[in-house]
Image (cartoon, rainbow, N blue to C red):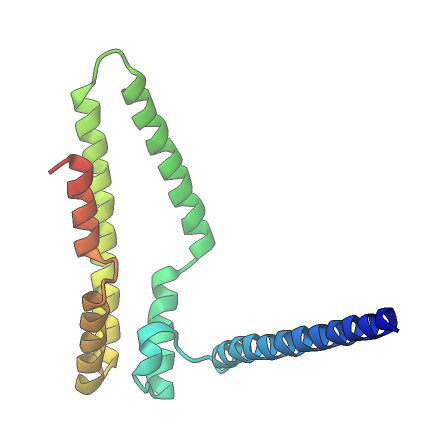
Length: 173
């Protein structure tokens, strides 16, 4: 009798455990799916992402900003392949200079100048894009965007200040 009672208790506790686990997984799956669906729904509507999504842009503004971004990126795949080839070539040159028995200062300066020119060009292009987008926004939207950027930086976003700190740490300053 005790064995039968013990077996019944164990069987019932197993059933309750399985039922409880199943209901917890169902709830978790539903919450995760709901979150994913909200994200996908926002993307299906063709809306903006990031800070732009919080600026209450009109359809015209969204279209103008998308056109600016499309013009900026152009044929992204072709540009990406070109940049990868350039990086590979630069890496080979750096490796050759590193492995050489004596350091060729002229070659190092030439590579540094090339890298600086690329960095400068990227900065100029980024500023042109930001300016073009700012011209599409209303003064209120520009102000709201500036506030959001300031909040992001105050929360410890790893922006230029963080990168400067990392550079100082690498140099031992």
